[in-house]
Length: 80
Image (tube, rainbow, N blue to C red):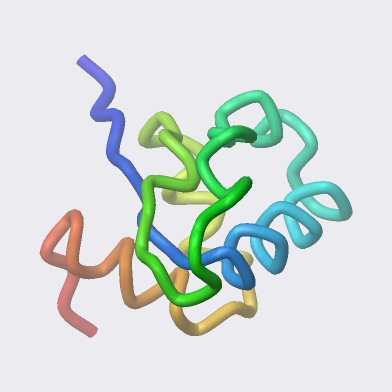
């Protein structure tokens, strides 16, 4: 069974990851919590996306946003 894990972030991280996915992984866009960032403090950590395992691994292998890789490493206990 595929794992589905939440990615937490603040408002700036939401838009950073959303824009990255818009350019590199369009199938991930439907997994974003679009309402999670409206009206929240800029630094408040909220669930910003709930990706299936395959997208998490694509992000881990391809995304150049270091905070995303760190969150995925922590979720799946990946040690490099």
